[in-house]
Length: 272
Image (tube, rainbow, N blue to C red):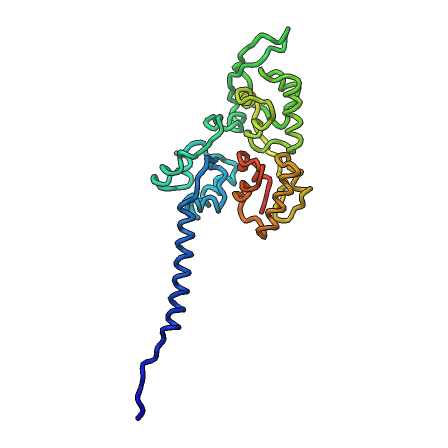
């Protein structure tokens, strides 16, 4: 009977261990990347699946927020965000300092005010005489911002011929306001004046949005969105072709001259 010798599986085992080590390092790299994500101020009403993941939200918590927003509702405080999503106190403590709500977020929804015929005080310019005297009305009802005329806007203190025309022109280029914060995007309009307008007008009937697919649309079509210069639209397409497709709206902030401070509004007009 011949002698038997132990079989040496060292090379095969080495390959298996090496493969395992590569996978382990990849997992560590991904986790490290997730943990090292730099958080910038953001509006928690506009969190994508990807952004929610990087912030530490579970899929269920993200879904709760999206379901809430699907009913055209907004969270207006960190307490309300936790109530809607169900996130832990520790995660809220981590994220809350970065929450960025519009100045008027604490006010009641304009639609609710209109429905209950509630009124607000607002300083307006008197339409009688020179227009220099001011009056405060306690019986002004909320009207639709998408229906107001330039002439009606001039009644509000701080808005003259140029600004009133500029507001209407900007609204028309958008196809109608879909978010009250867009009023602050009108060039030359101070936030104090924006607040005065929103005490009289709100978005009672948001227009439908024809979304632009940034993974298939041409430069020309992307540039139609009022927030994009043609050069930015061209860079979006170039970036898309370079990476093989845009997987998250958050990627857009890496594009030169992209108006990242308006991303949460811009993404309302886009689809992947």
